[in-house]
Amino acid sequence: MLTVEMLSLTVAGRASDSPRMLLNAIDLQIRPGEMLMLMGENGSGKSTLLACLAGQQVGLTASSGAWQQRGAVCLDGVPVLDIPPMALARRRAWMRQSTSISFGFSTDEVVELGRFGQGTHARNRTIALEALALSGASDLVGRDVMTLSGGELARVQFARALAQLWPDSPDGELFHEHVNKGRSRHFHDAMARETVSSTALPPHGEARYLLLDEPTAAMDLRHQQHVLGAVRRLSREWGIGVVAIVHDPNLALAYADRVVMLKMGQLLADVPIDALDAALLQRCFDVPMSFVDGPFGRRALMA
Image (cartoon, rainbow, N blue to C red; front, side, top):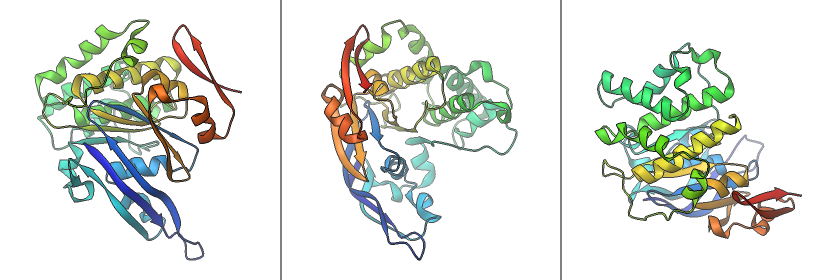
């Protein structure tokens, strides 16, 4: 299990600035096989929390000045800051909000970077192509990443995160087939009604976690649906715990098991998706909200 234990993070900033608290006493648990969506206003601490879950808070705050942490993030009881980098990389993958690539790598070469230190070259090549297919990016194989649009690059970066966690076993080769079998008009609503098993574990026996910072922000509607549907299915098939930052409450309603809201660095709400209501959204975003029932389930509307 991935746990956040009364985590607070403060950054001193410039000499003329007073210390700023980025996170304040966050207490949280992410179970294997669970899809959690993280919501909040700009600057509420979402990306900072995700970086802490990834064990990257040192790099996050290094350019801002001295930092101080209280509490801990633990993976199966071990602080993530104490886990060797290569061992941690095999247990969690972090897709950042924006990642610049300054060299003319091909798309499949970028995805293969997620396999660093794992498997043979031939095996990693196969996994890279499978991950690109799962990401709806088979048409981008061989393309120079410098020529991609923002949405295309996001799909490639998502594929790299998947490749990093891909089981080095035959189970992984079956996953893309399972996803395609499951796709139908009502697939996502059916998935939304499934019950999460707190004991779900991936085929390789270790709980792994996928951390996604606004993964679909640059994608068109079709690819948003494809990618988030694949993520949800992956969490079920492999028991991977997912934490994804989103701004659209309707994405949470369609795909999440649970929603966590942050407000000014503090935990505002941690609720199962069925408990998400207009009042919570209004407190989170300070805008009037309402819900309507339609042919595809509950949907949130902004007044």
